[in-house]
Image 1 (spheres, rainbow, N blue to C red):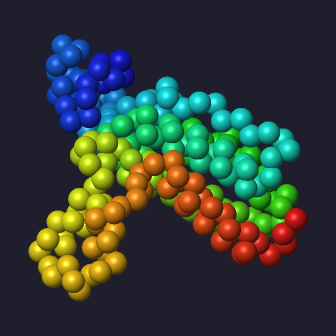
Image 2 (image 1 turned 45 degrees about the vertical axis):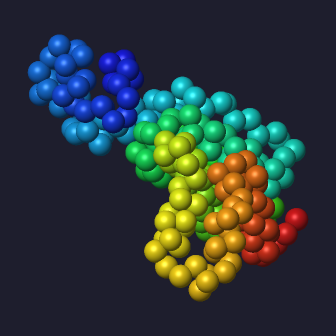
Length: 201
């Protein structure tokens, strides 16, 4: 793992790690089956190293707990950088977010959500966090707001007069990669969840 940490994401391969360690590539396969598994291990290691210990106060309601969880996960994933695409809602990521997930689930159940709804809620919240963090990483790596870039390129090939609203956005865009965008997304998500709560408390 120490050797793998020194390699940038684009150069992280089984052979590169073997070269650093001065061993045959087959020796690496004894510990890691393939490059995808290697990248996932390095990504999880980076997440653990960069994630702050999320502390959710005992008196926090489910909305506040959800925001604290979201900020911690988003910041941790963004710190992982280009390896973040290897993070998914599989067992390794779940293991690293157990405490925060348990705390949010407890607040949801206390607020009247049933177990099935709370489970779906956590899956949706985690997906939102991962998607936003990856958007931020992609934009940073591209050096531009990728959605805006693609929109402008698409409009350049069409008659912009047929897309007046999109054309205005292309000329005067909002930054959809900043903290305000995350807050906006969480506001909508939490409002929707509150409306779906069968027993609001």
